[in-house]
Image (cartoon, rainbow, N blue to C red; front, side, top):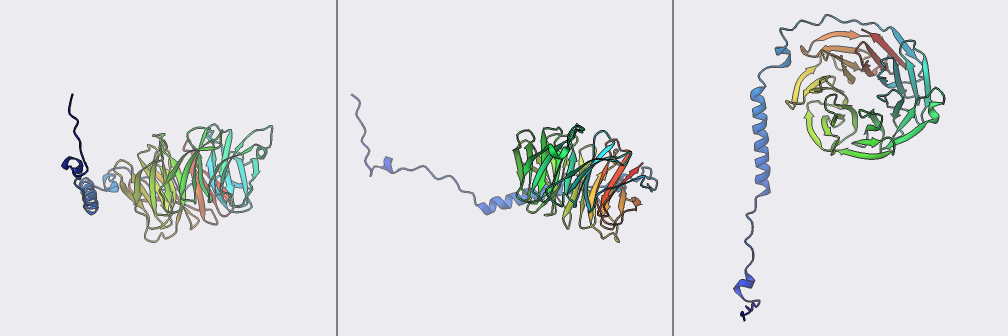
Length: 365
């Protein structure tokens, strides 16, 4: 019969404890992280041997642009804050401080729908890809969806899909009529299911109000946001992670817009500049501004080719920039107050601008 080993409390075997793992000093880890970060930045600088406008020197110059408004849409009783095109390239939706949503026929300038919202300052609106719905929100902290129907008043077919804890600053349908992406003054973005009105994913990371969002045209799983914390961030829609962060502005970022290829995006800021960030290089590659241009930028958008960048400014004008050469190639006048928003039509044939002067101007190319 095998002898049983008895181990008492004083036995050397009993008192033996596992050897402690070598502890790494937290400060040394932070130092190593900073060292790696510096090495990455140094490596980027090695490859940053040419500027964008230097590389574009041999390209032909864009001829001066002076488009005149062909149609002026009048109907709002206060500042127009947002505008968006339908995919049919004909209809537009606009939102205003007067608490109204108006759906326009951009060809005839007729108002097809006028919807009263439960709040003033309807700060954002968007058309669904199908053209059968619109969404909007503002100081009510909510994003509401309206189904457009000739047989029934659109205001009677309202559904609240999203609710934030502060004002709604941006909304867009996420590649289909089934999901909506929102941005808010509560420092967050969120993805919502339209049918169930339930949140699918939330996005936390900005330190101040999120002012603008845009979906990537080439990668359905990502979007970019711009914030009053002076940063732009790219997010993964699937897991809510911030995958890239970009800095460079000295004031609030009011607008973000992806380059048509999805490989870069532009920002407009209260610091009076527009900037172009390359997603692959993870850095700013161009800045658009003049020494005497001190007014803030409220909205940006690209031409369909990406060669032109449009910026709506607080000085009542729209500046047109050559994206590659970084030169200003045109200034559009006509509005009598700040240009609050602008959008290029889906086929690139027209530019619509919204203003605090209560009008929307459509300029065909």
